[in-house]
Length: 341
Image 1 (cartoon, rainbow, N blue to C red):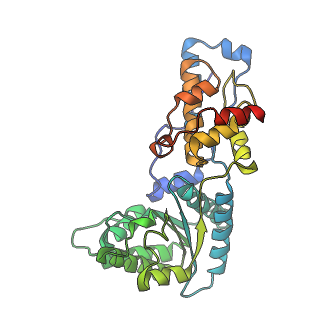
Image 2: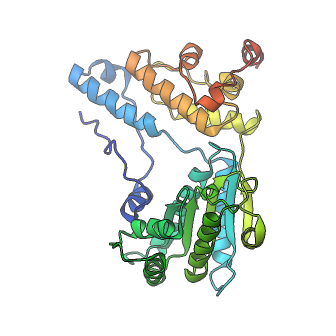
């Protein structure tokens, strides 16, 4: 039997090659063997089978949250609105606390857009989407270098930021780029002269590349991105989409159920995680990122220890991120409410 999965290592998507692989790859799938076939595996086959399941659970699935749906909708709308704009194209800013799905949302927007373009123009050498992250404590040259690195442009020390920027713009105009994703936008600090220069340079790219610019960052409205003349210009040209942790409502329970259905374990009791939805909310603070980590880590642990099921005891043993872990749920509260459900 062959249980091979894709390579464990994935290329960074801040390069054109890595981004294209991200776009082309379909979500991993895995079909559990029947009980008899599973028990009949040789030790070597069992090891291969479990390794393939670990790879599958390390990625699991991306749940289409309300945030992702809204970013997909707004991003699609803006790319259509900007098609014939010559200047003052509208952009989108996705802002919220850490680990609330901002980066995931803009990546899914970029993937969906590029797949549409490829379907419409098959075999065309377009570069419809660029994905970069704003450099921390960056300079205009560092920002221009991020674009050049994505395109794999050779750089020399004598090239200044404008040399690089002009080369990038020329290539992206010829390649019909129409969506630029800029992550970690909170790295631009408008209270510093470096931050202002960086903002001006990003504005240069936005004005010279006929594309829709989509930004994502941590609480950008609190971090000073909209302050001063430059900040007001950004605010006047961008739609703001907020992200946040989820309340314990039907949407949360639905996400837990969706992720539980994606598990590939031989002894897991269907619906047991759905009955622990309130406990999971208390453990993660309603963070989709923390929920994903907790369930993926638990599933991999269940494969490693041979239990083949995600239980409350196993979940209790898995640490989540420090931010969530530092505020543990009230003992007994989640138990009582889950039992009542």
